[in-house]
Image (cartoon, rainbow, N blue to C red; front, side, top):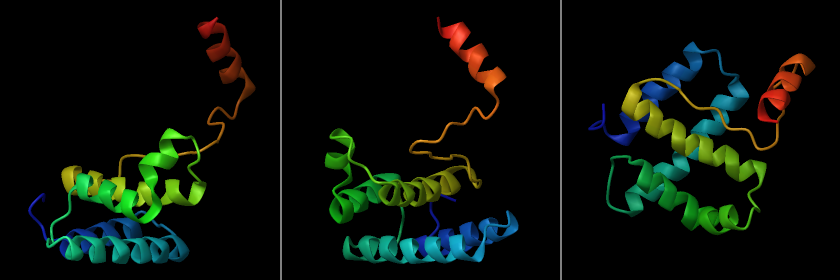
Length: 121
């Protein structure tokens, strides 16, 4: 799957998002971002995706590395990061693996929070 042209990789990933019942709004957002990534790849003379190329896209378009160093990433840039990393995950594993949260308390139950806090003390 690593040797697929980017357009084919995106088509397979879109099919997987639809299979997983992502909303139309989410899929449309991914399509928009994929279009920007395709344009960036083409401007760099390739039709193959690498996560390194995706990170270069983030740096060029959003100044990602600098914002990450200074702690100034916005949720919208983190969302684009998810698109970049999702392409890499899907290319490598043919599945969607990671979830990214800026500031979300993932422990919804106070009992879990107490256990973690106790274990860390």
